[in-house]
Amino acid sequence: MTEILHIDASARPGLAGIDPHGSHTRRLTHEFIQRWRAQRPDDTVRYRDVGLQPPAPVDAAWVEAEFTPAAARTPAMEAAIADSNALVEELVAADLLVLGVPLYNFSMPSAFKAWIDSIVRLGRTCDFRPENPPLERYVPLLVDKPRSVVLLSARGGHGLDPGGPFAHMNHLEASVRTAFHFIGITDIHTVAIEHQEDGGELLDASVRMAMAQTLNLADQLAARPLGQQAMAQTG
Image 1 (tube, rainbow, N blue to C red):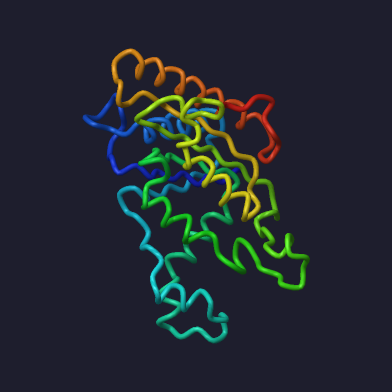
Image 2 (cartoon, rainbow, N blue to C red; image 1 turned 90 degrees about the horizontal axis):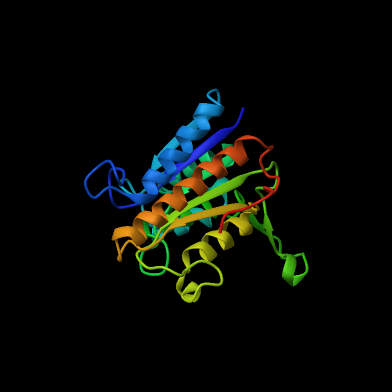
């Protein structure tokens, strides 16, 4: 049985095309999960909405607790990282992460960055081993089982896919890949809606294409052992 961690990071509630001013990324993750459940109803889906209920950002108390050995932490220190520990446990348990993350001003929403900061943890999801050669001192720890990531995004502009004229302005996907590679998750698939600022047929066509890619990706991943590269990945 597969355990899915479904995260939405949009500041918009509701689903585009259904609710007024609804989120395109929430619509994509919703459709992905519905498609998956239709094929694999016994799999577990854990949901977290970091867009509407963001994790607390890293502060001085969090840093002090994180870099204090576990045996020496005070109750106040344990409380400072309790929420982060819960987020890490959800991640560790997951086989598949379905992430709805819009592109905000060239990168990720602050709420999703707070989630990333909470789950990239020394001794939990990565390690630092000074005895190793310089290029091998950071060691990913989430290599204990295959895990896959589906990143479903939406952008106001266009041409931000690899090879596009504005690809250099898309720091969202690069940042997500970097963070997950760092902790040991390398099977990452992306789909994005573009042309939100243009609207009209350009947006409608992009939505149709992204929806088809999302459903196709759900079919591909549901049909194969997770962690194996799909025969075709979306851009």
